[in-house]
Image 1 (cartoon, rainbow, N blue to C red):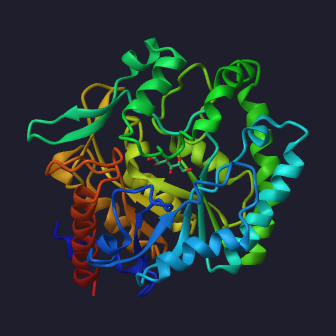
Image 2 (image 1 turned 90 degrees about the horizontal axis):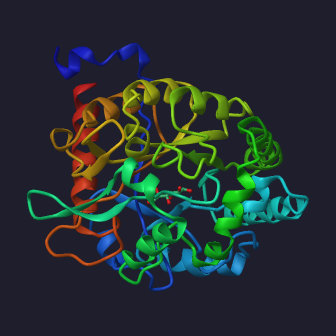
Length: 374
Ligand code: DNO
């Protein structure tokens, strides 16, 4: 069936437009400049993070405006934050969580005042995303990040943190803030006695405190899926399938409590039908941010990241974009991890070239779907 024929017009909810952004790290901690980002066609802004503020501290107006002004001076917007990280004490449900949640809310209010519309965060305990190989060589001479569950399961925490730090090319790695390292072993131990139900209670406690504020200040809250979707060190997994996303979003049913649809994280789970997940949660108006990238499985639990193009990986990127479009998605999309190509040296996954190719591909898919649907 042609694309035009397969687009169900009755589902199309109007001329809403997505916005394309690129992830960018402030304070000179990025190999990619705002000037370069501005020159990628169609990119209107960046998703960023005040990396120098320790997790749990308030993001003051001064600190926010410093970064915002720099971004705006290149004609780019700062409407997306990735991430406003959640302190481990909130995840653990410790008494200090109330003070930390108050700080989080103050940061949200300040971000809203600065014009931020979407906050991406995750509720993964102890560790953020992880790859067992940050530079797997591909047959075309590029390299990509890869994950082998059998290899990762054999590693010690020390081996994991060391490989992530050493592979980062002297940049900070998102989600691997050095201040976390000394606590990690103890935290892993702590979670051995926390049931999944208790963990979900801690999530609900947090959401019930922050989501009403998100409603009040007009900010969308977008949880990032667990990446990869397989458990390490017996830590609870919370967002790694359609069912778990549904459970998470139903902890607080406000539309503000939404999802970052990360196609690569969810697509790494061979059990996940990413198009169906996109359809379900976009049609409920709960997808606020999309990370678009492709993955190629080498076994049920092992995969490597690939170029964005559908033919390079296991995901049908056109079908995903078409689903977003048909369901009136009007949030933010960013190309996700790219390969390292053309001898670029940068933060793994976050170089310029392959993400710019990804952005251009996403623009092409969106324009095609948009025009064929009219
Ligand atoms: C890795 C990223 C994650 C993501 C966080 C969101 O490259 O996808 O670090 O930003 O999980 O909180």
